[in-house]
Length: 353
Image (cartoon, rainbow, N blue to C red):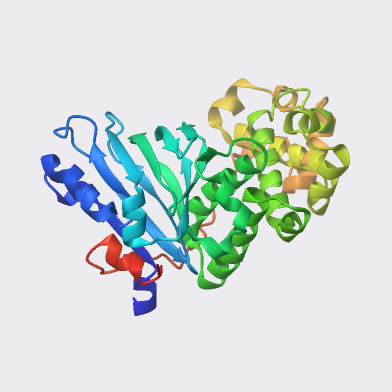
């Protein structure tokens, strides 16, 4: 493993410490960013881990609460004295997966629950009460965002562009470990575009991020289709209404793949094929029933579309019991932890006060 890859990601877990010492271990390692102290019984194990990966000068990662059977409440803050001491000039962006926090940032009240997105200015004071859970977070140099981003300190960014950004960060969190080096370079630029377009939206920033924004909308619509795939009224009109987009935009987004109704049909055919491959289904159900259950008005229409898609008829699938041969896509580019002794040391390699 080369030296460069070893400097890209920092990982930390409290699992190495004894249960009664885990909170202190967490405080010691994360004190590079925040002051943290307990507001609850410190005898409750603080079972947590986190990681940060360097994306140019941005740090991206998250926290995993590894024992969901209990939570810990603690305080997290940056005081004026602390700000003067470390002079960090960065933003801290956090998506709450299952964690919650409340408190204040100056005169702004903060109350962010699961699914919420909040931006904190590390150069401005704040005090939070945190109930532990999973998060996705970023440390962003101030110069990466327009000056107007400072007005978002402590604000919960829900709905609209904030919701799109949260979706993007969830996708990045999921896919980053499997990205090759050239894909990471693209992800860095895409992330910059999304941050600017969603946190400080202007016609220019939205235009720069139009590819990423369109991809997010397509992903949302795809998820919506999966949730309602067998609903008889799943059509472009319902999708436009449910997703809040125009019919012309829906057609534009799905034109490269043959249109949204073609996508729905392919998904239904795939689901029907899985049903026909199931031995229990072959014994109990006729092809006409499978067709009807998967949104096709007639067995003839279903059989014609099925053969176009898979090169054989439903009856051939049903009688021969064809088997899937799933392909495996090799993933490369996983990142290793650095050998820095603590997070502060690792962070100072990349963030200059």
